Length: 489
Figure 1 (cartoon, rainbow, N blue to C red):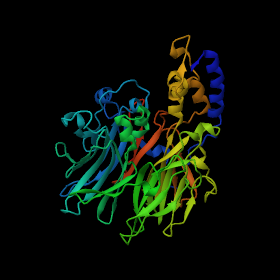
Figure 2 (figure 1 turned 60 degrees about the vertical axis):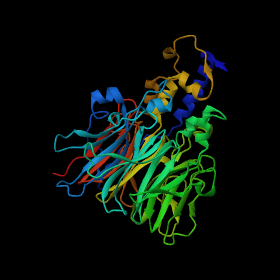
Figure 3 (figure 1 turned 45 degrees about the horizontal axis):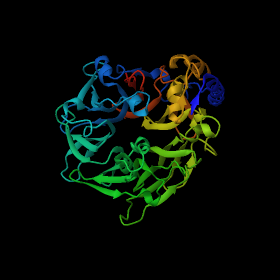
């Protein structure tokens, strides 16, 4: 089907109405303590350095961990694993170029903005099929098998791999484990002396379009909702059937809490679920704790977990497909679970403190990261508006996503559904948000505009270490940014 400029104008009006319904503008609030907007400073160049950014496009600080090697004479370093050329994977860029993710560590002893490259996949002598396309998860773990401490990094790619280093130093990284299954090690947590990992074939979202009978289709139909564990010597499967529900297509996150291993699923059909397993009795069957997305079915994935004040906080991802179908942007929710497995909404319907979904910002599509720092609990979001801005100002891409062909009488750049200026006028503070609380009920907005850069569309990672709170901001337009609270004087 083809569309003319007139047809586009009508559809543009509909798109405008949906965007305009995105809700109120939340503003930063001081609150009675904790970190405020002005307490953060940028500690990296975009993408880490201009030369490497021009070549490799370091877009996401996909994983972040603080690691102190055995025998180290220092307080350790913050390590960050990247995902590169994100727009290419999302379909915004044509073709497929090789990607070369890396792992960097913060070296404030060298300069306030120095990030030392400790693993560059350009140098690992692997082809694009076997080389990781990103490092999605990272965890410090002392092996149960031999007592050695390693920093582990979970890879994403056409093959799924697990990397590690005892020191974190350049030249010490090794591929510890690999599977031919495409996808990601999304989540990592320590539980009862083992390192547990969640697997998800997130390539299936693209591969399933390849058609029946193709190799890609076969890969897409392989199990995706898998939990594995390692003792540092071998890796084995703990669960591979999505807890018996075929609509649980992936395990997004894991967390050890109250003697059990908790897992959050991706279930776009029925709403996300939370399960617990590997409890006091190893032979006990898994137990479902939350279903149907908790407060709302539109919460299609539970993607972040954090233990704080005797509760397990669980952050959701709002449904991609249903955001527009049901009349405007739909925000994600935050829930918490107590030690008796009773859950309550922190944001959304019947929330304990009256917070609306997305903390009142409908474009907050993910609760993307969480961290406790100095007695306060912080939650970072992903804001869909920068990506929506791209789609609505690039009609060929927008209609291509729906399988429709755009027939334009003018060059594409002159056939805009909306201009960036118009979108910015309606949503002047789009970009990642950061919120804080002392009790889980009363929340304060720390920042609502990507720390001044609207293209910083999500707080992807957070870590408290050495007296500072570090934020990893995802930005597929200008390159990732790392911010940190100012060191105590």
